[in-house]
Length: 163
Image (cartoon, rainbow, N blue to C red):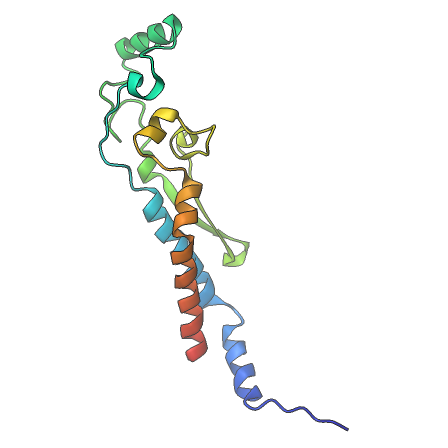
């Protein structure tokens, strides 16, 4: 008969029992979401570009020009647009949320502003103008900040294992 004995097994089982709820991990994951929310919600600095600088033309056609001036006269839009104050503003930078689901094992960072995809969307969704003035797609920010979040979670796991 062969016996295999793990030295410190009782201590390991006790430690794993404390870790079973993964409360520390869920808290670190949520903190990572809050960190990402903070990074995504930072607007670019003031960078005013003309339509001609971004698109090559001031107007695409008469219908676009008529809509613009009609909306301006009706008070639907303001020129210049002032973040969080102009008529059409939904306060995009203030609408980012962090939501935990799946028992805290999934964290979602989202924004419910109706025009969010035009500002933070992927290529093809994001407005060329907003990309040109410095708004970054949310996925780009998440990709860039991912290693920081992974390090934060790793540190939480290490601290818990040292207890």
